[in-house]
Amino acid sequence: MSSEGAIRIGLLSDTHGKLRPEVFERLAGVLRILHAGDVGGEHILLELETIAPVTAVYGNTDGWQLRRRLPQTARVEEAGRRLVVTHGDAIGSPTPAKLAAAYPEADVVVYGHTHQARVERVGRTLVVNPGAAGPARFKLVPSVAILTLSLAGESVEIMDL
Image 1 (tube, rainbow, N blue to C red):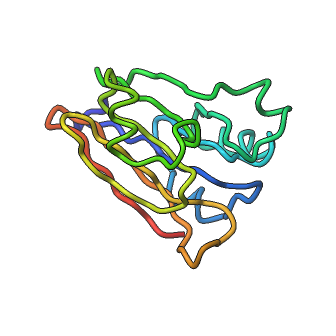
Image 2: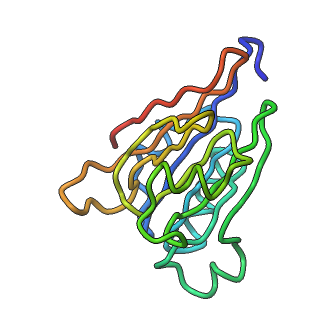
C-alpha cells in the first residue's frame, strides 16, 4: 500500500482492439491493470503495460492467439483482497448476483461483456464492470474504472472516456 494507505488498480474491458488516448490519462499512476476480456489483440496489452503490469483474461470475441496466452479467469491478491477477473460470458448473461455466486471466495469480481458500467455489492463481494473502453457501441459512453483498496474498504470510480 502507498503512504496514504490505499492502492489504485485500473480496470477496463471490451477494448476490441481500440485503445483510446484517454485511457493513459485516466489510468496514470495505478499499481496494476486488470483487463476483463475482449482485448482484440496483443498490441493492446503491450500498450497497457507501459502504464502498469497487466493481468488480463480472454473474452468471447478474442481469437486463438490470445486464448492461448490468457486464462478465462484470473485470480490475484492485492492489499489482502482476493480479486477475480473474468469476461463473464461463461455464465451466460452476467449479473452481479450470478458472478458473486460463481466466485464465492472473491472479495472483488471484475467483469465485462455487457459493455455497461456497473458497481454493485452482493453480500460481502464487490462486483464491478468498468464498461467498454473500446469502440462506442449500443449508445453507451466508453469508460474505465479505478478500484481503490484501503484499510477502510474498497471503492470504485467509473470514468468516461
